[in-house]
Amino acid sequence: MALKNKSMYAILGILNLAPSTGYDIKKYSDKVLSGFWNENFGHIYPTLKMMLEDGMINILPGEINEKKVRYAITEKGRMEYEAWLLEETVQQPARSEFMLKLLFSSSLPREKVIFMLEDYKELHEKNVGKYLEMQKDLEQGNAIARDRVPFINAVLRRGILSGEAVIRWCDETIEEMRRA
Amino acid sequence: MALKNKSMYAILGILNLAPSTGYDIKKYSDKVLSGFWNENFGHIYPTLKMMLEDGMINILPGEINEKKVRYAITEKGRMEYEAWLLEETVQQPARSEFMLKLLFSSSLPREKVIFMLEDYKELHEKNVGKYLEMQKDLEQGNAIARDRVPFINAVLRRGILSGEAVIRWCDETIEEMRRA
DNA sequence: TCTGAATATATCAGAGTGATATAAAAGGGG
DNA sequence: CCCCTTTTATATCACTCTGATATATTCAGA
Image (cartoon, rainbow over all chains, first blue to last red):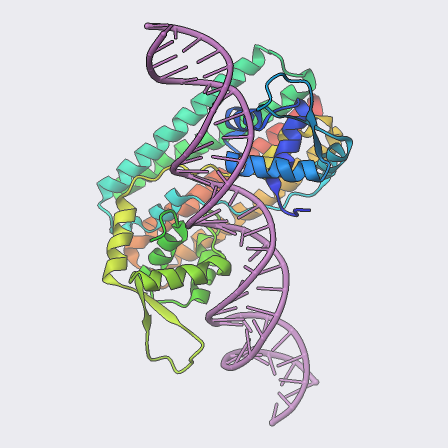
């Protein structure tokens, strides 16, 4: 079986909440997980196929529509998933093209660098706004299991605090670029 | 030519500072860029080969040692690099397995979750310490071009501010988990 | 009824990862 | 000076993941 396929665990986590189609999984990833996770169709469908072969998931019968395939987590899948939750997480290095560019920008006109930073700041302001919106929705409490609320909130708080830190850093750095 | 190979731009940026071997590039990436960038040998060597074919770089002659191949940026490479610096950077989604796990951890014992968070906090404390150390080295001003200093400092400040935000978030979330 | 948006699956080339293999040079201790 | 470990150096491979593209159906609204 595949060894390092992290998409599998994300899919197991989503199917553990509710049986879904590949399309549903993508939607959930874009709507809920975006900010710290992402999935592509180009990886979801092959992974689902592999997981089906491995007995991690099965196909729910019934649906009149034949093109639509709804998957559910199996007992084996749930065991794999719970083992993963308990595993220690090794830190994966992330790539930020923006930071790479900034480090190499000493030859650029200062105004250009400041413009880049202002753009970046705006992006993060929008992100923070989105998280605050989602937090409000969460408080209005819809169809979400009560015990999951603190965890969803924690994830949103992370987005807010990190975003605010980036915004402060942008301000500070713009100031620094004006001085230097 | 390759279209989305970001490694190429990182390599051009490094070669623009000084001619290097593939090994040097990896070392620079691990030492200086780590925190917001990473490169693998498995990608560096094929990319160097491709860049050589495209005339972005050339091989420096001389070296007595035959196994060692030292590359330098060409005029074409420098133009490509400078165009990239001016391009708008599109935000790339990042994956955090830790955050994914946390979101799905509502079924785990609270002590386990707190333990995970404490571990994560410690990791970021170490990172911040490392950045502070690097900042001190930078102030001692070694072999770095004067005009690059504000940019290196900006990158380090980003690491420090972001790290500190994560640490605060860990404290807050541990507290929340104890209450809930 | 037309039309565009959303739903749904699939495939492919290429980017990037992580492990492994190989071998020479350099450095330090006994 | 020899031995041993570490560092330097390049290369390859299977696998993960990305982003673009193709295709077709259903649904909502003008």
